[in-house]
Length: 465
Image 1 (tube, rainbow, N blue to C red):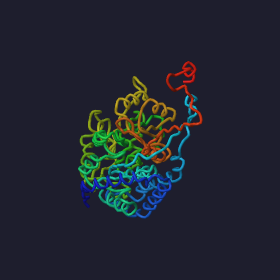
Image 2 (tube, rainbow, N blue to C red; image 1 turned 120 degrees about the horizontal axis):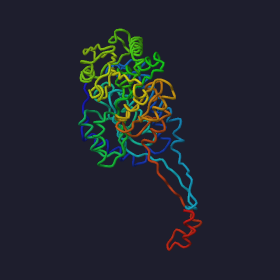
Image 3 (spheres, rainbow, N blue to C red; image 1 turned 30 degrees about the vertical axis):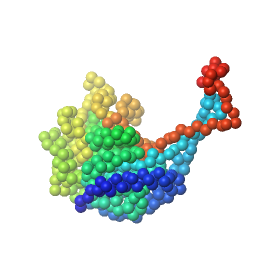
C-alpha cells in the first residue's frame, strides 16, 4: 500500500475551515468536548479490529502488544479526560494581595485554538491519538499527520477520523515530508510533534516564523544502569522486555547499559535466557516479535553488529526484517552505536568498576557528559537509584524497571533538552493545548485614590506594596 500526498490546496482549505470553525465558538463548551471524547472512545471500539490488523501488517505487532502499548493507552487517556475535565477546565480563584483591594483574581483556561499533531511510525496509534485526546478536551481543533512509513495504520486512522468527526473539526492529512513542509508553512496555534531531533529543528524553525508554541517529544540515548546489588534475574527480564518491545523501536527503550563489572557476565547470561523465554529460540517465527519498519531501518541497525564484540545474539534476517536481541561489549564511545539513537534490538554494554572512583560517580559522570536522555533506568538499591536521579537529568525514568513510567496517565511524559520540550498525558495533555489566562475583576463600589497621580499619602502606600 502507498499513501498518496494530500494536495497543498486541500491542506490550505482544511486549515482555513478549522480556523473559522474554532472562531465560531463551537468547540468551547464542556458539553461539546465531552461529547466529542465519547465519540472518540466509541470510534476506537468500532475500529479496533481494523487497527489491530493494520498494526500487524505494518509492524508485525501482535494483538497483545498492540493492545498494551497502543489502544489501551489511548482508551485510558480518554477515560481520564472524561472523568476529570470539569475540574481541569474550571475557573480558579487565586489569592489577591491587599494592595489590589477591592479586586479578585482568577485563572481561566482557554484552548490555544487550531492544533497540528505530527506523529512517527513506531507507535502510530498511541503517539497520534493520545495528543488528540488533549486537543479535544481543551477545546481545540486538530489536523493529524500520521507517518507514511506505516501506510495500513495511517489509512485506517484516516477512515476512522473521517467516519467520526467533521473535517472542519478533526482532519487527517497524509503524505511524505513535502506534505509536512506544506503543513508547516500554514499558521497554527500549537504544533505537537513526535519524532527525531533532526525533524524537530525543522518544526521549530517553521514555528518560529509565527511564534507558534510547540511540544516536541523526541528521543535520545536512554541509559540503563545495572549496579552490582541489583536483582539480576528480574533486571534481565525487565530489560529484555523493554529492549525487545516493538523490536526496540521505542523512543524510551533502554539504549545502552552501564553495568558493574562484577555482575556483567551473570547479567549477560540471564538476559539471553530471558529473551529466549519471551521469544523462543527462533525469533523470526515468534508472533510477539515485531519487525523493523523497513529495509533502511534494518540495514542501519544490523550495521551496528558488523565487527562488534558480541556477548549474545547477532543473527539477522533481512527478508523478514528481523534482528535478534543482541548484546555487544564495550564499543568505542565515539562509534555510531554510542552516538546515534539505536532504535532497534542491539544493546551496547559498557563495563564500569570502582577503581579510582565509585561506580555511582562514574555512572553520573558518563550520563551527565552526554545529551539529556528521554529516559533513565536504574537497577539496584533504591536509595542509590534516587541519588543517581538527583544528580542527573532525563525526561523521566524508572528505578528497578523500564518503560513503565509512560503507562501512568497521572504523571507527565516528556523530554528535556535535546530529548524534547513540553509534556503530556492526563492533566498535562489538557494543559499542553491550553492557555492559562489571568483575569482580575475590580469592584466599583469603592475607588481608593492612592494609585492615582499625584500619589498622595505615598509613604503609607509603600508600606503595603
